Length: 481
Image (cartoon, rainbow, N blue to C red; front, top):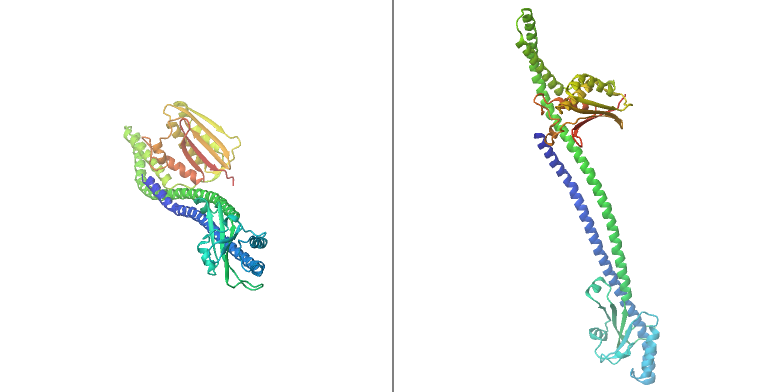
């Protein structure tokens, strides 16, 4: 029970140690999402800056064209018309045609959608690319008034639904620039009296569509890059989780072994001390009983009680021997030996019991089993203990299968019986000292077996077979050196 509690505590400690990795994982994923969202925001900001830059360039472009147009109108229209007609009246078809010719030739091949010229006094459109607008009044609005006062202004006009305008691809988008028309001398800066107002309209729909396509490409690229990073991150995290889990399990097993070793060490020291103290008087009892037995035999007196004393004292001595073997295991005396010969020696020893109680032993040894460096007496004790346990698991006889093979520099010996198998509620207690399901016995047999196998740097495990019965699997390293 204490072992299970310690194991649970170790798992809880390991879970606490895994939490920092989980925190790093969550922080990493959160950072990736934040970076992605930040990138999207930066994309929209870049698009906003690009649109602002496009608007500014379009405004500068329009003002430059208006300045050139101002020079052309003053020198090629205003002066000649004053000289010929005495005053400017665009209602006059000749004057209107001359103005139209000058404006169109000046703005030819430039990206201009509409040009309107306003009267400086009455806010009336005196000239326009669209003949239907000529003569319209109060069409300029606030921008017209700013131009009359000598200030150039521009505005952005968009048409479309909410999402089109939000995402930056409206159905119609135009930059409208109002600027004053002044008196201008050739090759000089325009700074004279305001004579009229010019309105220039530029269609930016294609430019904004280009920006929108660029925006889509940037977002798609960012999404693809972030998706790739996410896949790589998931792979790294999964691999990291696997490594952390494996190391955690190894740490738990190691702590369990250390905790078990510490408890067994203390228990072993106690057992060794008690066994030593018991063995001395027990030896005296046995020797005294043997001596008394000889004297009684010479006197022809009944000695049944002495036989019982000697028998029970020897049994107690065997139990103490088991205690000492478990508490202070002897180091193995390594020599070259053959596993199959040791197994046959065990079978020969148990043959009378096997035949009398109806057991069947089947063996399957690999013909090319290598010799191993081991203590044959200890291995004989191990195999004998396992075979006796297998026989005791089948009260009315049964079949026991012994296999021996070599796999990856390890000799694998398996003992399979057809008993009832191991109950699930005792699996974790099999290796505990003094635990036994038998009416007699110390419960140290499997503990001694495990100590011997581990002293040979091997492994042992007990498990249920797929259909019925149990099997014991022992792995011993092949070492001929």
